[in-house]
Image 1: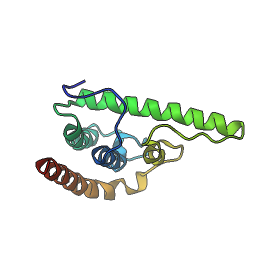
Image 2: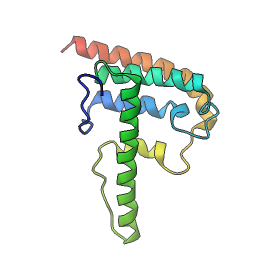
Image 3: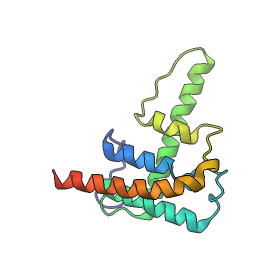
Image 4: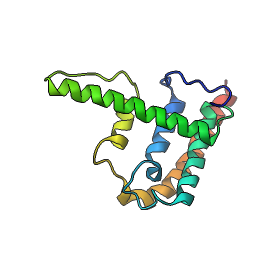
Length: 143
């Protein structure tokens, strides 16, 4: 991982919440039904947007560090989802230990798709990323 990047659990803070929100609004990175999922150019643009946010969390982050972190996040989510289903099968309730489980449920749940809105969300996402970056920069200046 890049310098200053910790593979430790993800802390519950505003920067990570913004990261997950931006990720959710980039369906070309996770939604196989998205018309742009197979477009290398669109995926690269989406990764660049997400990397901009990730660099605010992890100074010196690279594309490789970002993709590695995303794979780790997906693995953790799937592990927790298996536990949820296992407990449901025996009639019990399991409360996931990941604070961001609910944020990712709309992305990784079966049937989750934003393909219909991917064209509209592209415009909204670029504005959202710029606003997030400005908010985070202002927050750091005030520290």
